[in-house]
Length: 98
Image 1 (cartoon, one colour):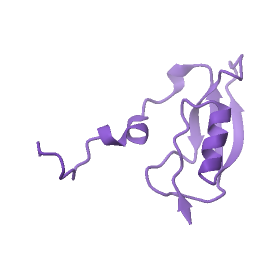
Image 2: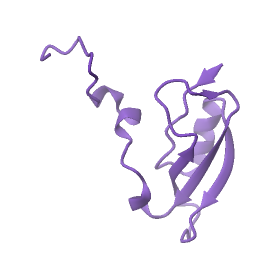
Image 3: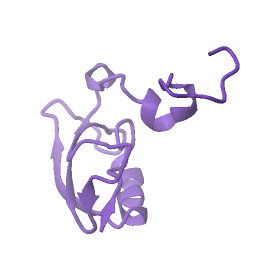
């Protein structure tokens, strides 16, 4: 059966490990940027498979992650994953302004 691929960007390696564990997924390859000087402060800026809002990956899938110390590399796409309630959905019948 399928699970959601969790949103790992901005997380540390340890945070990602526990998030993957909760999702019944495995950590795949961990790739550090060349300029990473301190691995303890490095955060994830890319992942494969990509994060999903609906179940898209099989249990036990290995998720590869890329880490950096350069926050500008992280795509600013967290909103639908971290704050789905703020995203304007086309069929939100509960919103009286529609």
